[in-house]
Image (cartoon, rainbow, N blue to C red):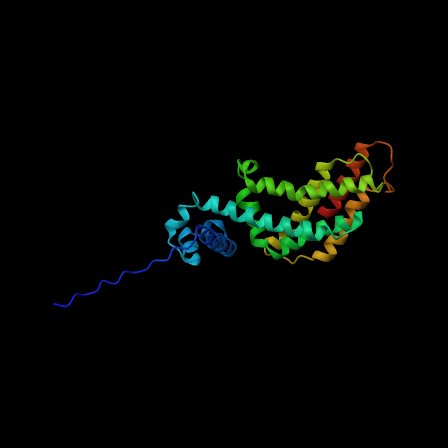
Length: 231
């Protein structure tokens, strides 16, 4: 009898780096489209073109994958932000660019911003995550710009740095919440101008607030700015 040939199926295995890249890309797409709760690892695996078990050989679970996806996004944002900010001169311009960049990011990636707010920031272990460290690095640019303004003699020498930083980022995100909730639009250019003027005016040496009082005076000015933003 003639011998029958047994055909051996060739199975190609992608390099680990390629599998990881495919999983991260699929994870970002599915999380953005469906949110965290509705997203499934099976669907992410299918989008990445792999079996579900492959994901669990790299990530402990869906939450760890989300954290890695958001961390990767922050790293991309930081790299782009640093390059663009380097070309901006002048304290007001740099302050305005920082606010504009944050608002534009919310406008362009609302689903990822919502995921950070809803799924990561409220967790008790958030401050221990890579995402938190990257968020602090991102926010530190505000402190750097304020220090530049102080060194240039444009800002008062003793502003409460954390309050100013929290007011800038908290104010922009509070203002953008209606947009993130799907209840309105977000005017990035106009809002960036208004917020830059308010923050700069609250810190400026030649502002309307009396100079005596030091830190207390600056806090009062910043609280007034926060009230305007709330309105």
